[in-house]
Image (tube, rainbow, N blue to C red; front, side):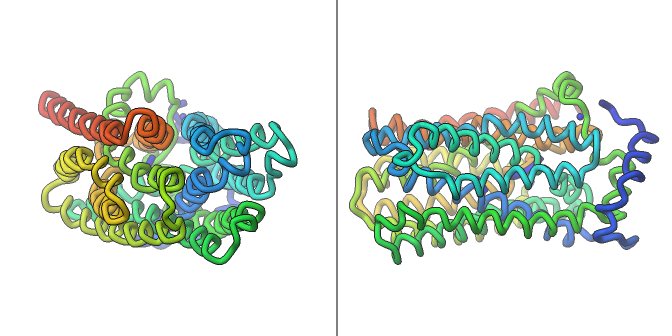
Length: 451
């Protein structure tokens, strides 16, 4: 996973000197012209699409491949649960990566941080592609898979470039919902490419060839996309206009301790406000693949194609959310969709257990709701952060939201469903919706009180 938004109080002279001594990367695209929100949005979409592609390649492989390749000695269910446990490691490592790479940025440059983080991502992804299976390497294959997954998480945290925050600061006031949703389009783009590659491999290769080498091809592609995305993002973040914003301290990192001592409330509320979206995110992408594999004879390539249709509805929902949010407000939009997701959670067991028609309905309805909600989930309350804290606050809020809402979602949903029934997967989703509504209500009450 396809994410998405957002560390000493740097003195002005120090920042100015720091950026003056690092002219090399900025020469990639040196110019004096103004950067429009549209240009920034392109960088946001490219960066997020590459991140989500990496995310979904690993996520799909966790459900379809890793149980057989790395846990052949376990039952299919236990192997999948172990694979999902390793999947969650990246979400635990992500905040660590954010803090570590913020320090790299403070010591060197933003370009150095971005380059290093994407190099770590590339090495980790390529490492998985070339990793021998359990039959060849034994337990070490699992250890290395875990290390590479942690590397992906650390790199994910370090790849925060501040572009969504810059976009929010430069977006016209009456179009903030529209520009907020643009970065979220990276998720459906990344998923449709990843799912399309796996669907093609499953439909054209034998099961033996797919498990032997076919599953590795998407990881090679992910490595190549990382390289392209790196240069695309560096081309934007090294402009004079971007540097000027940094020099004005609009997007400088602040110490995490300082942030949490004064802004912990906003970090927690911001993470919980998006919980419904992030919980639904994995319940319509990763979890159904594992459940179909375990309980059905349905074609996996065909099911991936249904998910690809669903993700097109998600993209449409994300776009619609931009218009809706600009008319009724982002927080009201998110609260309404959290309520709808809560209602949808009650039907989860009936749909998933309702044969192919019910499963297809679950996917299409779920992705539609996800698009409408996820389009505004990133940074819905990050405007609460004073400008000084927005860069670091947005990054850590996103990390915490993914960790709490999504990191363990496939593991929990599959575990409780397989042992207690699908109703508990719906209950898990309902808890996310309730948490989002509670967080939004508290945030509104605090806003009224503080004003």
